[in-house]
Length: 472
Image (cartoon, rainbow, N blue to C red; front, top):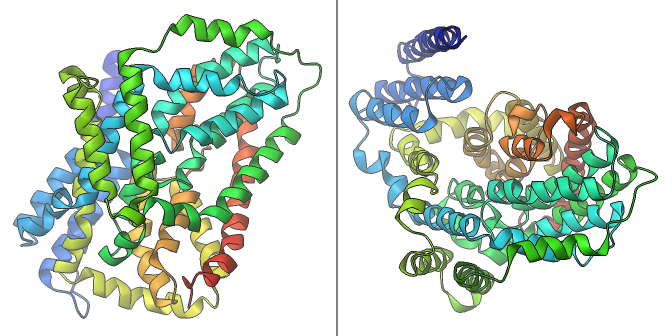
C-alpha cells in the first residue's frame, strides 16, 4: 500500500510538471503583445508554471515560489530588489508578528479559557449555545490572529456541548453547532483585519496609498454592513434550518468543571492576555495616535519573545515559516509585474471588461461568483492573490476604491464545501468526531446559503460605500 501511494505521488508529480512546463514554454514562445517584451513573456510563462503547481500541489507552495523567483531572475532578467521586495515591506513583518502572537495564544491555553468563560454567559440550551459559539468566536477574533488556532482549540468544546445537550449523532443539531462556530471563528476574519494573517496579506496586494488608508478601524467600519448581514443572516439560518427538538439543557456544573480543569491562570496566559489587549487598543487607535499597526504587532511579538512566552521551540515549530516564506514572495509579485510591464498590459486587457460592467452591483456579483468557482480549484491564499491582483485595477477603472475588490474576494473565498477547499472546517469536522457525529452532506446547503448571503451582504454595502465616497 505504501509503495503504491509513493508510486501514485511520483506519477502525479511527473504529469503535473510535464503539463506545467509545457504550458510555461507555450507562453514563453508566444509573440509578445503590444506593451510587452520577451522578458515579460518569460515572467508570464514562469508564473503560469507556478499557478499550475499551486493548484495541483505536487510540491510545497513556498518551494514553487523559490523556483519561480529563480526563473524570473535568470530568464526574465528581473532585478532581485523587485523579486524580494515583499520581504522588505511592512506587511510581511506585520504578518510575521501576527503569526507569532497566534503561536503564543495557542501555546498558553488562554484561548480555551476565554472560550469557556464566554459560553458560560449564555443559556444552557441548544439555541443559547449556538449563539454563544457564534458570538464567542466573533468577540475573540480581533484578539487572536489565527483562525486555524481558534478552530482547532474551540471545536472540541463544541463536541462536549453537543454531548451534554444530547444531540443526535449525525443530526442537524451537531452540524448547527459546528456551523455556528465556523461563523464566529472564520467568517469574522472578514470583519477584523487582524483576525487572520490573511487580512494583512490581502491588503498588502493593493497600492501603497490604499494600504496606508486602511487602519484597523477603517477596515472594520467599511465592513460593517457586511458584518451585520452575515452575522444576523447566517445565524438565523443556523437556528432555523439546523433546529433540533427534544434536546436537553446543559447541567450547571458542566462549564464550571471545564474551567476547574484548567486551573488558575498561568504566567504565560496573563502575559499573553495583556499583550493582546494592549495590541487591540493600539490597533483601534492607530489613526488617532499615529502608531502604525506594524509597530504594534512587532512590539507585542517582541514582548512575548523577551518574556519567554514564545521560546526557541515555539519559534522554530509553531511560526508557520513555510507559509510566511510563501507570503513574502507573493507580496513582491506586484512589483515584478510592474517592472516588466505586465501590470499596465493587464489593465489594458481588462479595461473592455470594465466597460461592459454597468454598475457596482454587477461587478460585485460577477466577482463573487468568479471567486466561488475559482475556490473549487485553488486554495484560499493563492486564489485571493490571483483574483485581487487581477481585479482591483478593474475596480479602479470603474471609479471604485480598490479595497472593494479586495474585500469581496476575501469574503467570498471563505466558502467551505467540498471539505477540501477550507482546511479549517476539515479541522473542526475532525475535532467534533468526523463522520461518526457529523453528516457532511448537510454542509452543502449551508455553503450555498453562505454564498447567497455574501452577494446580498456586499450589495447592502454598496450604498454605504457610495455614501463614504468610495464609489465615484
